[in-house]
Length: 178
Image (tube, rainbow, N blue to C red; front, side, top):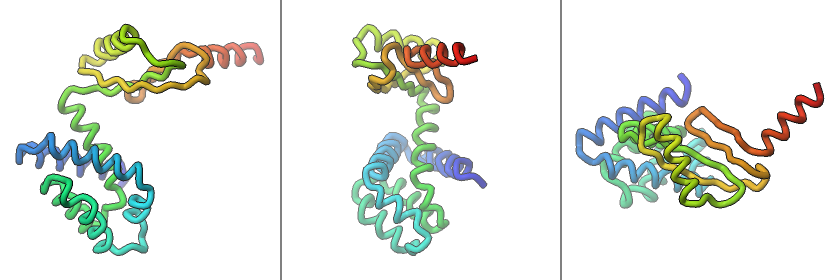
Protein backbone atom coordinates (compact mmCIF):
# COMPACT_ATOMS: atom_id res chain seq x y z
CA UNK A 1 0.00 0.00 0.00
CA UNK A 2 1.28 3.47 -0.80
CA UNK A 3 2.60 5.73 1.94
CA UNK A 4 0.00 8.42 1.26
CA UNK A 5 -2.92 5.99 1.65
CA UNK A 6 -1.57 4.60 4.92
CA UNK A 7 -0.73 8.09 6.21
CA UNK A 8 -4.19 9.31 5.27
CA UNK A 9 -5.83 6.47 7.20
CA UNK A 10 -3.77 7.16 10.33
CA UNK A 11 -4.48 10.90 10.04
CA UNK A 12 -8.22 10.29 9.68
CA UNK A 13 -8.20 8.02 12.74
CA UNK A 14 -6.23 10.59 14.72
CA UNK A 15 -8.69 13.36 13.78
CA UNK A 16 -11.62 11.20 14.87
CA UNK A 17 -9.91 10.34 18.17
CA UNK A 18 -8.96 13.97 18.81
CA UNK A 19 -12.55 15.07 18.15
CA UNK A 20 -13.86 12.36 20.46
CA UNK A 21 -11.50 13.49 23.25
CA UNK A 22 -12.13 17.22 22.52
CA UNK A 23 -8.43 17.93 21.90
CA UNK A 24 -8.49 18.56 18.15
CA UNK A 25 -6.83 21.99 18.34
CA UNK A 26 -4.12 20.70 20.65
CA UNK A 27 -3.36 17.71 18.41
CA UNK A 28 -3.30 20.02 15.38
CA UNK A 29 -0.68 22.20 17.08
CA UNK A 30 1.27 19.04 17.96
CA UNK A 31 1.29 17.93 14.32
CA UNK A 32 2.50 21.39 13.28
CA UNK A 33 5.26 21.08 15.91
CA UNK A 34 6.23 17.61 14.67
CA UNK A 35 6.35 18.78 11.04
CA UNK A 36 8.50 21.78 11.93
CA UNK A 37 10.83 19.67 14.07
CA UNK A 38 11.16 17.03 11.33
CA UNK A 39 11.90 19.66 8.68
CA UNK A 40 14.49 21.43 10.83
CA UNK A 41 16.21 18.23 12.00
CA UNK A 42 17.07 15.97 9.10
CA UNK A 43 18.69 13.53 11.53
CA UNK A 44 15.37 12.89 13.27
CA UNK A 45 13.68 11.68 10.10
CA UNK A 46 16.78 9.74 9.06
CA UNK A 47 16.68 7.90 12.41
CA UNK A 48 12.93 7.24 12.13
CA UNK A 49 13.29 5.93 8.57
CA UNK A 50 16.39 3.85 9.26
CA UNK A 51 15.89 0.07 9.21
CA UNK A 52 19.03 -0.28 11.35
CA UNK A 53 17.66 1.67 14.32
CA UNK A 54 15.46 -0.51 16.53
CA UNK A 55 11.84 0.48 17.11
CA UNK A 56 12.43 0.80 20.86
CA UNK A 57 15.20 3.31 20.20
CA UNK A 58 12.94 5.26 17.81
CA UNK A 59 10.23 5.41 20.46
CA UNK A 60 12.81 6.56 23.01
CA UNK A 61 13.86 9.36 20.62
CA UNK A 62 10.24 10.44 20.14
CA UNK A 63 9.66 10.24 23.90
CA UNK A 64 12.70 12.39 24.69
CA UNK A 65 11.75 15.05 22.16
CA UNK A 66 7.96 15.18 22.28
CA UNK A 67 6.43 13.52 25.35
CA UNK A 68 6.56 16.63 27.54
CA UNK A 69 5.60 18.99 24.69
CA UNK A 70 2.56 17.29 23.15
CA UNK A 71 -0.90 16.23 24.20
CA UNK A 72 -1.10 12.68 25.63
CA UNK A 73 -3.38 11.70 22.73
CA UNK A 74 -0.70 12.74 20.24
CA UNK A 75 2.02 10.87 22.07
CA UNK A 76 -0.22 7.78 22.31
CA UNK A 77 -0.51 7.86 18.50
CA UNK A 78 3.28 8.17 18.19
CA UNK A 79 3.54 5.11 20.44
CA UNK A 80 1.00 3.10 18.41
CA UNK A 81 2.60 4.06 15.10
CA UNK A 82 6.01 3.01 16.41
CA UNK A 83 4.68 -0.34 17.66
CA UNK A 84 3.16 -0.92 14.21
CA UNK A 85 6.58 -0.21 12.62
CA UNK A 86 5.22 2.83 10.75
CA UNK A 87 7.39 5.52 12.35
CA UNK A 88 9.11 6.10 9.01
CA UNK A 89 5.90 7.73 7.73
CA UNK A 90 5.23 9.96 10.74
CA UNK A 91 6.04 13.03 8.65
CA UNK A 92 3.53 11.96 5.99
CA UNK A 93 0.94 11.29 8.70
CA UNK A 94 1.49 14.79 10.10
CA UNK A 95 1.12 16.29 6.62
CA UNK A 96 -2.09 14.32 5.98
CA UNK A 97 -3.44 15.31 9.40
CA UNK A 98 -2.91 19.00 8.65
CA UNK A 99 -4.63 18.62 5.26
CA UNK A 100 -7.57 16.78 6.82
CA UNK A 101 -7.81 19.34 9.64
CA UNK A 102 -7.86 22.21 7.15
CA UNK A 103 -10.54 20.46 5.13
CA UNK A 104 -12.60 19.84 8.26
CA UNK A 105 -12.29 23.49 9.31
CA UNK A 106 -13.03 24.83 5.81
CA UNK A 107 -9.55 26.28 5.34
CA UNK A 108 -7.90 26.44 1.93
CA UNK A 109 -4.17 27.02 1.69
CA UNK A 110 -2.90 28.89 -1.33
CA UNK A 111 0.59 29.98 -2.30
CA UNK A 112 1.27 33.09 -4.34
CA UNK A 113 4.76 33.71 -5.69
CA UNK A 114 5.69 37.18 -6.88
CA UNK A 115 8.85 39.16 -7.55
CA UNK A 116 8.30 41.48 -4.60
CA UNK A 117 6.27 41.66 -1.41
CA UNK A 118 2.50 41.92 -1.88
CA UNK A 119 0.62 45.06 -0.96
CA UNK A 120 -2.40 44.70 1.31
CA UNK A 121 -4.69 45.37 -1.68
CA UNK A 122 -3.09 42.61 -3.79
CA UNK A 123 -3.10 40.22 -0.84
CA UNK A 124 -6.83 40.83 -0.42
CA UNK A 125 -7.45 40.33 -4.17
CA UNK A 126 -5.63 36.97 -4.20
CA UNK A 127 -7.49 35.90 -1.07
CA UNK A 128 -10.80 36.87 -2.66
CA UNK A 129 -9.99 34.99 -5.90
CA UNK A 130 -9.22 31.78 -4.01
CA UNK A 131 -12.17 32.19 -1.63
CA UNK A 132 -14.63 32.65 -4.48
CA UNK A 133 -13.21 29.64 -6.35
CA UNK A 134 -13.19 27.29 -3.36
CA UNK A 135 -15.83 28.68 -1.02
CA UNK A 136 -13.44 28.29 1.91
CA UNK A 137 -11.51 30.50 4.28
CA UNK A 138 -8.12 31.20 2.72
CA UNK A 139 -4.67 31.02 4.30
CA UNK A 140 -2.39 32.75 1.83
CA UNK A 141 1.30 31.92 1.87
CA UNK A 142 3.53 34.42 0.13
CA UNK A 143 6.82 33.65 -1.57
CA UNK A 144 9.23 35.90 -3.42
CA UNK A 145 11.05 34.70 -6.54
CA UNK A 146 12.87 37.39 -8.58
CA UNK A 147 13.37 34.91 -11.45
CA UNK A 148 9.68 35.34 -12.39
CA UNK A 149 10.67 38.79 -13.74
CA UNK A 150 7.10 40.03 -13.15
CA UNK A 151 3.55 38.80 -12.68
CA UNK A 152 2.62 36.02 -10.28
CA UNK A 153 2.29 32.29 -9.78
CA UNK A 154 -0.76 31.15 -7.78
CA UNK A 155 -1.01 27.56 -6.50
CA UNK A 156 -4.11 26.06 -4.89
CA UNK A 157 -3.84 22.32 -4.23
CA UNK A 158 -2.92 20.77 -7.56
CA UNK A 159 -4.02 23.77 -9.64
CA UNK A 160 -1.69 26.50 -10.76
CA UNK A 161 -2.14 29.83 -12.50
CA UNK A 162 1.14 31.00 -13.99
CA UNK A 163 0.80 34.63 -15.02
CA UNK A 164 4.51 35.37 -14.76
CA UNK A 165 6.54 37.11 -17.41
CA UNK A 166 9.05 34.25 -17.23
CA UNK A 167 6.27 31.81 -18.26
CA UNK A 168 5.09 34.12 -21.05
CA UNK A 169 8.64 34.43 -22.39
CA UNK A 170 9.04 30.64 -22.33
CA UNK A 171 5.76 30.25 -24.23
CA UNK A 172 6.93 32.78 -26.81
CA UNK A 173 10.25 30.98 -27.16
CA UNK A 174 8.43 27.68 -27.78
CA UNK A 175 6.25 29.28 -30.45
CA UNK A 176 9.24 30.82 -32.22
CA UNK A 177 11.17 27.53 -32.29
CA UNK A 178 8.34 25.61 -34.00
